[in-house]
Image (cartoon, rainbow, N blue to C red; front, side, top):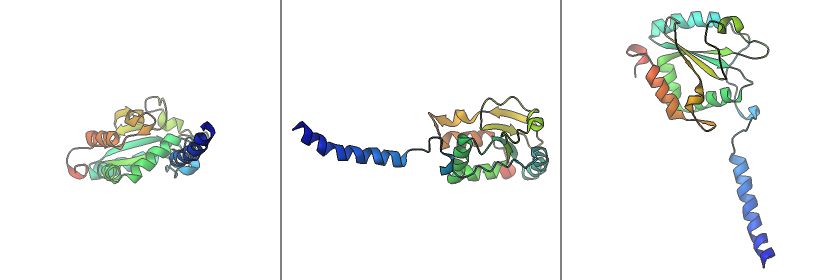
Length: 169
């Protein structure tokens, strides 16, 4: 009797395990995530100079996002933002975003030496439209466990978007 019960339950258990594995997050598998847009060949100082001009013309703030293609959480955050229309629109409305690469090949030490030490990646620096540092932010605060929470990111963007002009919704 016990053997018969096990034989009936086993297929259902295996199907449940297979379904769980199929929907599991890509635990460290970068191949399942799109690139995040970090470019080792870009000059972040030149990008910042251009961003200041754009931000002042459009009444936006500047968001420096520091990370690399090697960083799974950089890529997860990028995917989440681009998959959520609210986040994409709020970023577009209030911020000029600059991706600053940090990798073995290019650490951008000179550029990043002007900002507080980065404890982990990705990392955000929020700048005023003139390039003045407003905030150094670890996006871990946007997480519940090991997942980013869109509402926490949106609240951050709403809080820090400039008031009035293009940055106002």
